[in-house]
View (cartoon, each protein chain N blue to C red):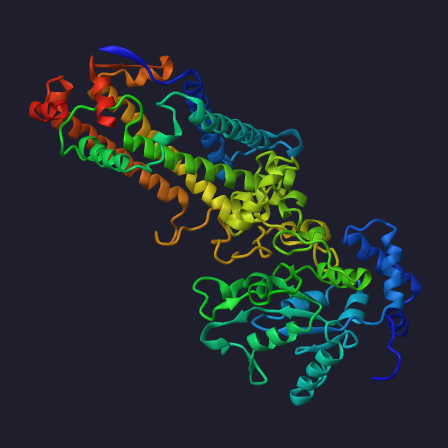
Length: 227
Length: 370
């Protein structure tokens, strides 16, 4: 086994900032969508907890957005594992590999060792779809936020509710996509453990240190397969 | 026809209004339109010097609540002057003539004021089955509107019906109810949203057109910005309760008595653009939220389909009644969890050898290497 530097520092930072932002956004978002019934004898003028929750949501949204922008930039300047070309299946080989991963890892009808070091083909494609959902979530979120914010940046999104047929529908799409994030997180964490368990390559810790492990001579074989 | 036409001011005086009343009306309208104070003079001067604006007011698929709203404007001058027969050349519900005479007054106005008259449409246009669901004088409403709009200077779409289709356009929209902007192209169109629109908005639009001979500034959905740029939520007097997290939980609880925010009762204030919180209704008497009822979002497209009214999350069609995003999401989450457990079990059985790091299919590995 020899170590390979897979996830560079910006990728790791993106990952954890993204994870924290999503957790913060999902929790505050869920509270905004369905605030708890708090009995209070206080006057409204003495309390602002719901406003605070909304502010946290908005700040986390900005963090989420710009973090996402940096990751897209890194897709053009980062190493081969971070490159944008992995994520969009425009080559026939990528579709072939996706099918292979489905047979080996999802349906488990084919028994084979996993030769991938970065994202496998199916994971890459999934992240491409996830990025599209990120984009949609940013658009719908800032779209409904634009009405209550006078900032020039959020006012760039005033066209979104018009496109989606009103603030109510935009809000609903935003809410439904929150569930996509929750279910994505479940599968994501499970698959990290799964790959660590069967591949023995340090998948879990790789997002902290950046290193993954590979059997001797596998890299050459992988490169040969690429050709 | 040949006699000199009277100005709005002259008519007001004839009706018994004082100059003071007239100036108050001018100031009120200017304030509502969000104009600067110097514009009060412009409005007054326009009403004093200009003769009536020719208006053809058509009724299609509607309930006449727009007209009803209009006559309840904050200032009696509106009903007396603008809506009175003096200003309306043709309107089915209010004009004196009927039958052929009515149709004649329509064609007369269209010819006489070609390119000058304002077409105001109340109601949507049914287009299914060649528009048979709304016929007037043997013509379909679709034909009438297209014909009249042809010679109009501008088109005002009164209310949600004309702006977005309202209830008759709700799923499954059996008559193919269509809003004006989808039917009429190449004419300036103002959408005066609401079911009905606030009377003062309606009067404001007409006075603005009369004074400045132009349309007021419109937003992306064709609504006048001075009335529809803020959400009901932003101008709601219950807003502090929202920020404080104080919500009505049911219509008969203590929180409702305290006048807390109606957000959890399905209030559409946060997603609805209208001036209800500022102008209020019926001469500023009240508006739905002030009366303890959540906003229904009547000035937004599809508001009938965004139901149920008393819940904040819309039903998702195709998943049965009473299925919100949260219920569907929770179901999918549980299904995912079950799937993951099944996958974990399957992994331990089918990948047993791999986990123990034995090549499970040595022959295949060899073919890869060769």
